[in-house]
Length: 496
Ligand SMILES: *Cc1c(COP(=O)(O)O)cnc(C)c1O
Image (spheres, rainbow, N blue to C red):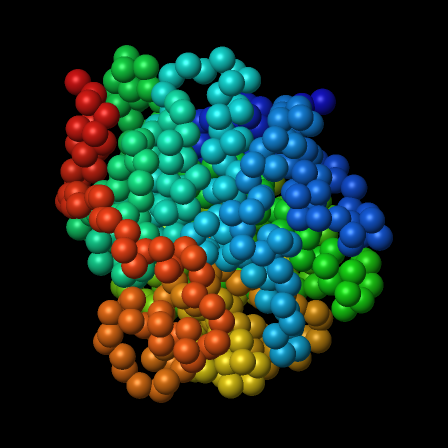
């Protein structure tokens, strides 16, 4: 039986996995979720010896079951190959008394590569299955990492175009250079005067704009999304939770069946939601620890049951988590309501109208698996220093948020459960805060000098993804006001 996906805002809006991947967002503004949890055979005596590709195949086959085994095998083989600079794809490294799952060995040295290296193949395979001959235009808002990872995946993929919007002053120099130097005849990068939430809100508005959709169709084009709202992003992320667990069984750190914690540096709630789905298919998970930076809207939500985005927005040293509207939380909300589209729609309408909603006590009671806290800028910096001093291991600021929050969790709970820190970026992507933390002094040098300093301090070699940026040509210069994003898309696509 084919697994059906339904919209969180209208359960009669139902599609298969491949259709959901093609569409990205549901046209009613909701997100697609599976109507039931698929069966996945999690036999860790076997899985402990499985490769990353084998684990990914197992998970993808269950959730994306209208793809044939050959199609899944093709997508997995194209995605998880030598573009990763580590043969195991996602190495698990012991740091102190816990483990760091390094998800930054792909093209753009951040965890978005885990899903975005496979999404283009899932999407073009889905298009072929459905006889779609329209050009697929990927529209993406990025807080820094998604944009580059999506472009790296989609560049020059026939039948596709990709438009990426990023907040001009909201990404690191390295991130910006990664994006503005992107080659490919089908890519367009646009900086906006505004923050990530402006970018994301306007991208969502374009998806929900019926007139624009008709115009696109008249030009033989259709939008799709590479944002983490697309289940083609979410599902591949479930795989590394299973893989990490299998590796712990393999090394004897845990016995098969023993529960573990995951600490996840969280922004749009995609990564940690994949952990939630992993536990729903039977992965033994004790706590999912949701770690935020000073944009701590999720910490307050998990503690009080009120989601309130009416607050100051901070530009922090972990920019990929500088988010006040965590889009994927809607999926969790939907499940907490007992899969009610009406209740979910009501809460999301409140968020839209007042910037705030409160969940019911019955919903709140189901949040026991989550723990949430945040780290200040000072705590992040101190954590980078502390982890390096003790273990000679350099964490990037996003990973350090998780690491610092895990420390608070330990102090508060004395929980001795084995814990995996989801490590989302290479420190080379955010060299300023890392070098300043490790040297103990301000350093305003250019990011490109900073990465060389970091190489000296840390002794770990500069990844190719960074070294090749040194003399790459800047190809993209467009900057627009947040309000002009739709116009910029129309111009680029020559819509009349
Ligand atoms: C995107 C990102 C995050 C946040 O992940 P979400 O799935 O949006 O919660 C954390 N760290 C890094 C480095 C990222 O790129």
